[in-house]
Amino acid sequence: MSNQVTSPAVRYPDEASLAERVGPAFSVDGMLAARNKTRAAIRDIAANVRPGMVEEDAVVMAKGVLVSAGLELSWHPTRVRFGKNTLKPMRQPSAPGVVLGENDLFFIDIAPRFEAWEGDGGASFVVGKHDEFERCARDAETLFHDVRQKWQREGSTGQALYAYADDVARRMGWTLNFELPGHRVSDFPHAAIHTGSLADFETTPSAMRWILEIHLRDPQQRFGAFFEDMLLEDAYY
Image (cartoon, rainbow, N blue to C red; front, side, top):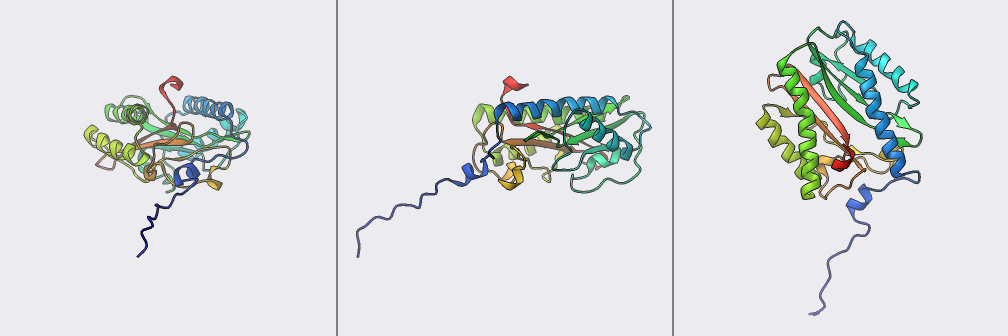
């Protein structure tokens, strides 16, 4: 019998580094420019949403805002979702003809491209006055930052971040939609590099490589709220 000790197989590059590769056009300045333009576009779109609008008209308006800002309509559809449509997973189409009420909730989800770089962002807004809607929209953004700070503070894996988000969402009184589990972002197109989710990532995610998504839903299935942004340290907020 041989006394030779077999070393464990070494994978290099490992799966985590392969998942976090970027393309030849990647640049920190470019990614931050795309992110900043995305956040500005979200604010501009929200400022043009009014009670009485039909959701489909809001989507047309949002696309116009992006084009006017010099952004390319990019790798997923431009979404503005009103009322009951805020419950739906992103890949599920909205119910047609939903009109924004006087006291209502909507969210924006855009993925524009600025030159070679991907932007991706979302946020929720309330028109009029509605305490539950306001709390849900506020909690979605609060939970985003809570999860992001856990990553920054503890170096948690993507899996641990979403397990934590699920637990906190329940304590807040909401359910977390795992059909929005976070994803890569890069110079365009990230899908040529990696299509896996942040919620499945078994390693500490790197900054400026991932989008953290939080979609909260009312347990009674009446409404939801959404917030997403690039995973970055506190200095960028």
